[in-house]
Amino acid sequence: MFNLILFGPPGSGKGTQSDKLVAQYGLIHLSTGNLLREEIANQTALGLEAKKLMDNGQLVPDAVVVGMIGSALKANPQAKGFLFDGFPRTVAQAEALDNLLSEVGEEISIVLALEVNEEELVKRMLLRGQSSGRPDDKDENVIRARFVEYQNKTAPVAGHYEQSGKVKHVKGEGSIDDIFRSLVREIEAKQSV
Ligand code: AMP
Image 1 (tube, rainbow, N blue to C red):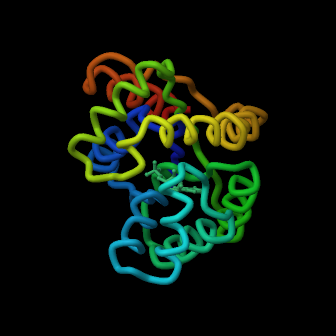
Image 2: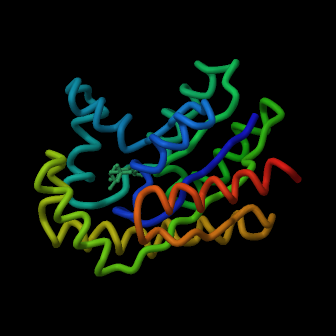
């Protein structure tokens, strides 16, 4: 299996690049944000609880997203690999993911970390808020709260994988196609090892 984490702050282009990477490599796309929004759309108890946190820019509890990822892994035993988008967002989630994968003899192959400066991120997200229908993209205070969560809880996840030399930093500014080519270059370099 080829298991890829697409890592980066909110608005760094993870969703856009995930769609392109999944099309190119036939991986299964696991976005915890999308899974949570499905729960909200279906008005499940989990979705209604998660919505309160999401609307304030806060992370939902680790157990909730780890449970979702565990189910998705079990549901796809024949997968060529997975692309994790927006997960793991805490070191505890990363440890849980490592354990889930090792139970089936697998591991993370590469962590691609998109780098974009914060002012550019806020601009992109406010723009996205005009069309995405996401309440958490519409309010600059909520966007800033998401960055604070990212800095405090998510940024350390890169350190977790840095120890094993799996993290590749990629500039997330420029055209969508140029960024995609940079990501592909890192994947090809890894696969030919
Ligand atoms: P995203 O679509 O990845 O930007 O996620 C939107 C929101 O869903 C986040 O701001 C969090 O509130 C929640 N969320 C998504 N993924 C996770 C995760 N792995 N851990 C905790 N909360 C998450």
